[in-house]
Length: 328
Image 1: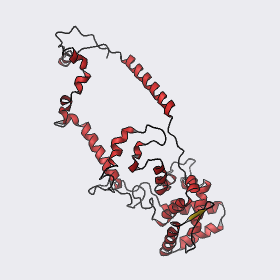
Image 2: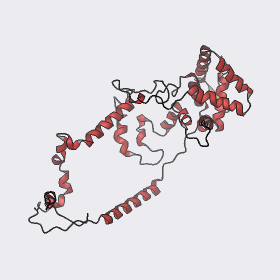
Image 3: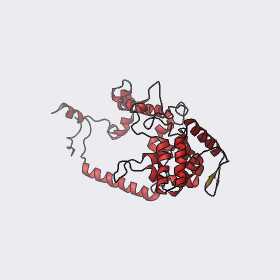
Image 4: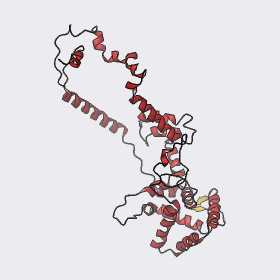
């Protein structure tokens, strides 16, 4: 008889019907899941759209578009994998894996988010005024563009909204104010997303919706996230959009964002990811780490699992009746 098998005979042997246990387990789980779904419902909130933000926060749309145009916006300076900026490049002791793959998803915010959509609008609507604005802007010197952009950027900080239109003080904005108004109009109409997701490969289907997804990154989505208690400092990754409970299993991960140095470091995301990776690796290697691999014997959990056997006084196999064969 195999020695390993003989060793197992030290412990009580019982019949086990795997199919029966699996059927019971699946049935109970299904009932619990369906019951929880019926009681709590499924968290659902319609996607935040450019049109929605344009109609409720028109100044935000214009500031976002202007930041994309002048290169000072969040996505304009984001960095890999979209462009060569450094706004979101994180590094710990010179290690920055976010830059390893370069910029495979090229994003030129001025061209992709502003100039091309407005050119499409001017052409589709035969709008000579907008076409002339674009020509004037494209032909201007870099210093002139910067002056117009900075003037309007400062003015938008004090802008007001009247009847859905953004009103700024008179100033030297060149064609930029008009261009931003057309951008806002395009977003309010609901056509802006289509312009951002324009097909570029002459195909039938749109495979790349990157520009539409990224346009609102920054102030607009942060405001929405704050209202839903889903920002990082609000334990956001643990919160669902609507119903309780949220993804509680992510608590260890999001906990790190609430404490220094993760909550204060510019490389907080990278630090949290590395920390969780290290903890997982330690857990994975527990059987091979001296000291930690003795924990199962040091902790009496096994006694609770085998409490019936211990209650019987730890009978050895010689005092036991011949065991029944297991179905497994």
